[in-house]
Image (cartoon, rainbow, N blue to C red):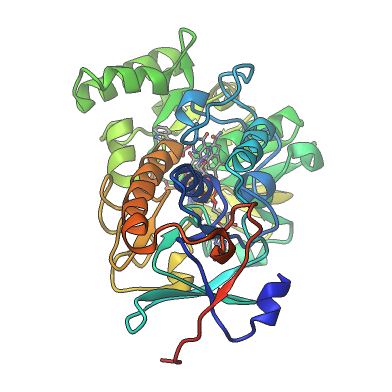
Length: 415
Ligand SMILES: Cc1cc2nc3c(=O)[nH]c(=O)nc-3n(C[C@H](O)[C@H](O)[C@H](O)COP(=O)(O)OP(=O)(O)OC[C@H]3O[C@@H](n4cnc5c(N)ncnc54)[C@H](O)[C@@H]3O)c2cc1C
Ligand SMILES: NC(=O)C1=CN([C@@H]2O[C@H](COP(=O)(O)OP(=O)(O)OC[C@H]3O[C@@H](n4cnc5c(N)ncnc54)[C@H](OP(=O)(O)O)[C@@H]3O)[C@@H](O)[C@H]2O)C=CC1
Ligand SMILES: O=C(O)C(=O)Cc1c[nH]c2ccccc12
């Protein structure tokens, strides 16, 4: 970023939106804009695209919804990809996607602060190196920006390694080890399964009720079945049907220490964002006793079970989920909750005031991302055409590869 260093103290004006984050959401917005001839700049804190997928997920990860539901706008997955692409295939797809739309994010730029400047009518976005300004700010930092590391009593005194799932790659280092896995969302379940495949001995902490559904039934994906049925039937009926399928294929999970919530799986996902576990084999290992369930408290060397029994563990894996980091860097007036999620529920949470947009905060996975990205690109394009218009190529500072980014400097009065 030599241009940034040269431009010390003078903001870099972006003739199009500034997008924060080069994950699937940021790339989707940039692609939809590029398709409409609108430039944008993506600022990304890491040195790669889709860093969640490249750096913070385990080796065995596959998409758990059929690929059709995980496609970004304007580009399908290759025909030869399986129904559930692997993490590496998804990353390849993302790289091809960026190349196809000629998107070149500015890497190693952590957005530390962003604020709307009323005087200039522009967003000022500060990274460790530069200040960027634009009429539009697109927040694409994701629902999974930071790991949740709960303050569990006893955890600090535990003598062995404690790893969050975002740093877990495979069970290869855990062979013959007793591992306590805290949390039983999709990460906890899949890590337990992976640990078993490497001959480790996982014990899983289940705190609350949760839904587990088979990923596939009769060769069809449960999610696909639900999406199809929802076109004709009410949500509650579809949820009941999913539970019927789940009980007949997995049995009664209550008996395994996994209680079902009263609200159905899709209704709960829509209302709270809590994703049902889509089972890819962990339940049968719980049934056979290879994965053990529930614990009460963590002690210095192990954990105390609800029945009073104590057990020693070699390692702890925190499968305790993720959180948004928006409150750490965005200064705004009440569009986001203190947890960093838009207050306005889906489908209307994509647009704030003064040119603020959010993509990928719908708790609906990549389907939600596509919905937001298309809306945002339409909305910004309309404004851009009216007010900005395509400037000559030499004035454009953008994440497009060609013409090579060139920067327009504006000086602002310090407010
Ligand atoms: C293990 C796992 C598996 C999943 N599988 C699926 C699936 O199969 N199907 C599905 O639909 N969804 C799935 N999801 C949901 C997931 O959220 C989406 O797949 C997708 O990654 C969301 O994209 P995003 O761009 O919104 O967020 P992210 O992929 O998290 O990308 C956000 C980007 O913003 C960057 N960033 C964050 N803060 C800053 C900052 N301050 N400055 C600059 N850059 C910043 C990050 O480095 C990151 O590159 C999965 C999630 C996880 C954790
Ligand atoms: N193959 C795939 O595509 C995969 C997709 N994913 C997705 O990634 C996202 C994140 O999933 P995941 O990482 O599993 O996170 P989740 O937020 O879904 O689950 C977190 C789990 O940790 C538990 N937990 C949190 N704090 C504590 C605590 N203090 N003590 C005990 N338990 C605790 C929660 O319990 P409680 O419910 O009681 O709060 C919950 O069971 C989801 O959307 C998921 O679907 C994840 C893995 C694989
Ligand atoms: O993988 C995830 O976490 C997702 O959010 C994908 C998703 C969107 N809607 C759902 C409903 C049931 C299971 C997963 C999802």
